[in-house]
Image 1 (tube, rainbow, N blue to C red):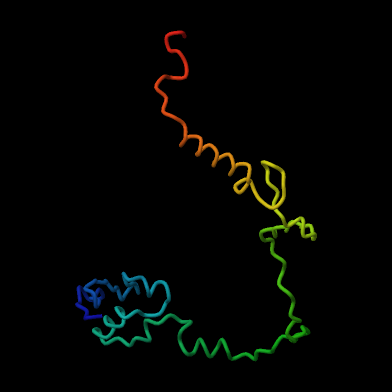
Image 2 (image 1 turned 135 degrees about the vertical axis):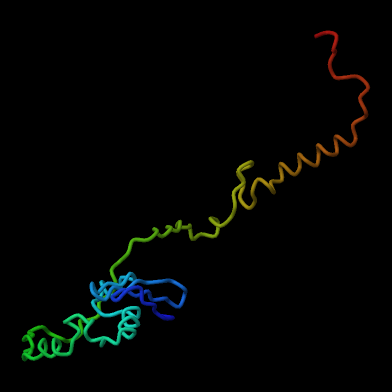
Length: 163
């Protein structure tokens, strides 16, 4: 806290480091920061107000925090509870199986060398696909030759007026 100012005989205003203000009432043992009410132990605002009035801080401490109370709590003998539990570390276990994505099954292939050859869907022969089929390649070459060697046509192939 930055400091405290006395409002009345038992009321003080304590200023924080960030400029905030807290009101301390010594008679009611209350501070507006709420820390004392929550913990029962004086906050820094209460300590500043107590110092201003020259009151010992111990008078503002709740009974459970006093040394006499702590001595009374631990004055009795504490006997340990008998433990019949095996304290050895457990045997390591494998982690539980988790469900993941199913593995893709691989297709069984025919081990004969003939099975590795492609079969054309156009002519049905082995060794090539439809893209490299000699029938299609032959047709494309002959059609391009036929188009290049055809004479230009002056008339349309059908009669427009006869329709």
